[in-house]
Image (cartoon, rainbow over all chains, first blue to last red; front, side):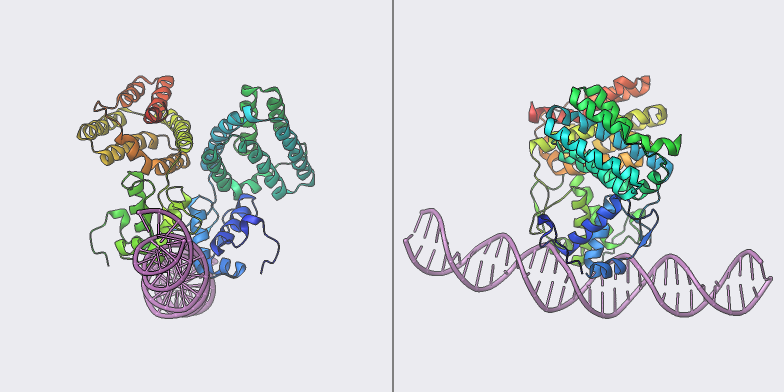
Length: 217
Length: 217
DNA sequence: CGGCTCAATTTGTGATCACTTGAGGGGATG
DNA sequence: CATCCCCTCAAGTGATCACAAATTGAGCCG
């Protein structure tokens, strides 16, 4: 099956973990449309494993809210209601504002440079209208910043929220007609440079909630 | 099989779900000491199921951070570092302050009465020095309030944090020599009655972080 | 008396299979 | 033409087994 080189941490990874990671990435990056159905046998066939590891991966993702299990056990990506989306956006704001706050005193020039580079890629994805690429690099931008917060539990929660929003995000950003580069990311970088905590908090809050405006507003 | 009466929501529940719920409750209420080892075959034996549903329950709990899986797959309850505990406490503060804020405008007299009744039970548990009972009723107090926030995703996250703190909480509260009733709960109730949002936020923050003082301070 | 080695045993992993249930389609009926 | 019913097949659940890895404890040597 997949004979491509794997990153070190994936070397000799158990089957269920391989499947889990592959599906997780797909979902988080919006590569699966909301409401799409999955089957354990289908997943097993695709990754060349039996139903057992497929089931473990699916249940793990369901526990994280990335997949929806119907009462009869059928598996699909969740179709979020507007209320749910708003709530998850509020969670993003809550968690990510805190994470950025904690990262601020630890953010040195090397980090800011790296963020600017990633942001360049984000802008590129926007102009190319590559939705999946945009989501991926956008999340990389945020994760890079939040890693500096040295708060693994909080970051894990934020990623769980991203995961839940994944399938919906694609549809959401698909409506974005804008081709202008991410303005809020620039504000975040500027606030980091200036050591301006209130400005940073505001910029992060705006960035994580802006995608929602066009849905609810 | 298991012919004992089950609660309504457990009726005809799949085996893996029964096991999951039973273990989850045990962990959240602090009935398992940190670092305790579990085995799939042992769990299967206890609940009279095979390894398969035991594995699903364990992996689901591991995904929620309630169990720790060693690199070799061995299962145990996590032993949290002080940094981790502080971070989880910060998460509790963040999430629960927000939840209480959202619950405030919806908190009518019936809810406040119910909170006062639960709080009576909490006080009773304190005087009886019943650690598990204390944790259970204390969480019931918080959950009852937060349910009014109408924010299921946020509440689920808060419960995940409780779950992660479960095994540690017992040890934590075991050090509490106090037999005085929960003062912060009274402040919460008072703030709810008065419709005092800043006071409520402060009281909730104090309540969820107080247990930590004796650890870090 | 303490540390090391090796083997027996415990434990997780993954495949396979029997069983049951629920979803979806096709046809008959009003 | 719509609705309802039944039937079939697909899909999840859970048990069992073979296998590999790791743990543990006994026995031995220093």
